[in-house]
Image 1: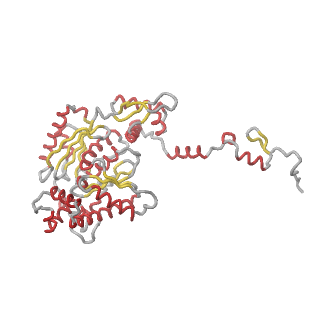
Image 2: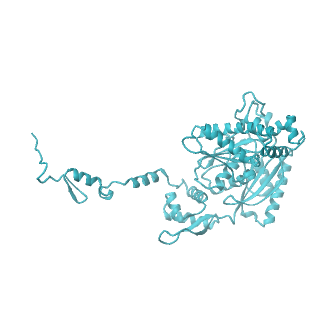
Image 3: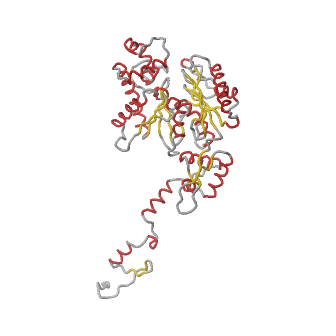
Length: 460
């Protein structure tokens, strides 16, 4: 039979030493150990565990090369607007010595500037850093049917100057690019901006992207799709030129200029002559295998609907794009009369008059708008469900007059039918660039490529 220890009135054997005191196994000792400071037990507090787990989940921004690390640091500065060296080190999990070296090189290259001081936390006030918007610039150009817009933007993506010229219309590419090159030179000369201060030129245009040398399907291709815009405009201006889909430009412009997480996911629905969608995934444009991701205009909206130029029937572009709306107005005698237009009236004029009538509550115009908004809302709902998104932005000249009306319709659809509506809120907002979103975004494409190359946006 084993030895029975006395329950009281006798000295208990010492089983261990904890925090400098004897532990006997008695209940009072066990409770005191549970309440002992974490430093004495060698175990982390719940707060320390949360912090360490968060640090482990946030990988260091150290890249595969010094250039990639520098790129990631620029991205953090851009997203924060203003940030100190100490905070950069904390956010990036890099040493303060590494941050100091990178910041010094960025200051010397004129990429960033010291912009003031943060509040003191007990010691010396930290110096704040931000992108330098007073020295280097990017140019953004949009080639649209009714107008071409040229904007000059600082490194923060904010517009500092602009001009507008006639659209591409039915003109051939060489003639249009001649006009664009002259207008750009006049814009820069008027400001006294020297060529060496231009980082590059971005061009936003519609149509599909093609790899060099690829044979095109001549049954539905216009003269702009295969035309070497980059090479031709570069030869006319002397600047490095990058061409990007207009919807992608609008999405990247929204990402670059609104701050937020460098790894944010969202979509930008772009409405101009047709319908496009820019996908920002983990802070970069998702382009797909051939560079044509986001062609939401060629998703099915109406079974056996109107014939689309792609060869399919019932594409979203055939029933909900501004072009489709104007075609329906022209084909309908009642709508044609209330809009006071003819078959020869310019597309832009028809669409603007339609927008005014919708705002005034005209019933036939409202019915057409509601049908259009329903098609767009359903398409956006499908994308939100597919990609599990919580942010949708709207951009482009197609939203210039009816942006808030479209925003409300899409927001209502998502609040009612989105699969994750009960999990977290889904925000629908009008883009910051409004009608010129693609032009400003084209400048952001240049900035993204030159300043943050660790997030690739180049066409395949």
